[in-house]
Length: 119
Length: 143
Ligand SMILES: Nc1ncnc2c1ncn2[C@@H]1O[C@H](COP(=O)(O)OP(=O)(O)O)[C@@H](O)[C@H]1O
Ligand SMILES: [Mg+2]
Image (tube, rainbow over all chains, first blue to last red; front, side, top):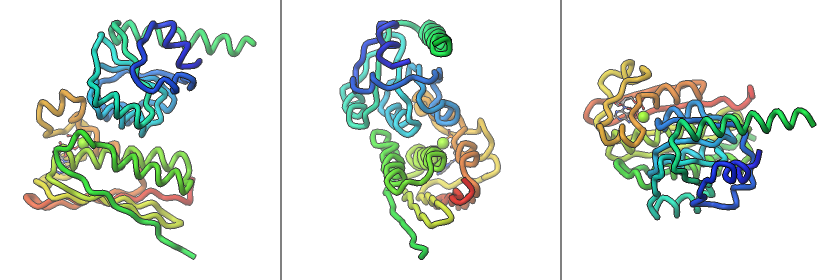
């Protein structure tokens, strides 16, 4: 499914690199440990986290992630958004918790895979 | 013909703002010269974890790379506290990172293990009070 569809269905607020919304989402990962993301998050995933400092941009860029969802209604600093824009990393925010966000992403990805198979 | 493509980046301890810049530039370079996708993925993890260790644990350092037909070699050398017990440092979960670094989501003690897992050879040399050199090789011909 497209990141745009996911963003719409979860009412995410896109705060950097809108043009990344046309990318495909192939999976998801939840972690606040950056080395864990480097080790285990698959390319093309959305990464759900509460970390919001500038290093998340490098992690997403180096791992070819489709986007980052920052949970818990956290706001990002201008510096981080500038960096994300420069490195073409799409960051979205949500007032929901990591648990709720992951649950919804999981369900949507499974539904969309199911519908792709049936047609 | 067996030309070596090489380059280097300077790393500054404590500079979290620019962390990852060298690794991203290296990844860009590897993409330009069209090394395989899997090689680039591995190199990105290796370089970034090594770069972070200099930023977190050391004062300053260099990341150098050498690419031949056979291998991609990444050497990270720093001036810093050094590592007293390398075997312990390699263990997953061991970290001496301060609390505030852990709060950023670094310092899980997974960095060295991540490097090891994403390369074919890894050599760590360190002198306490002087610095650390990590020499990593990723083979290019068997992918
Ligand atoms: N370049 C370095 N200089 C000094 N100590 C280091 C360096 N790299 C690693 N170490 C030591 O090895 C430990 C484990 O490193 P690593 O696996 O990357 O975990 P982390 O960086 O999360 O602590 C560090 O906490 C530190 O004590
Ligand atoms: Mg580390």
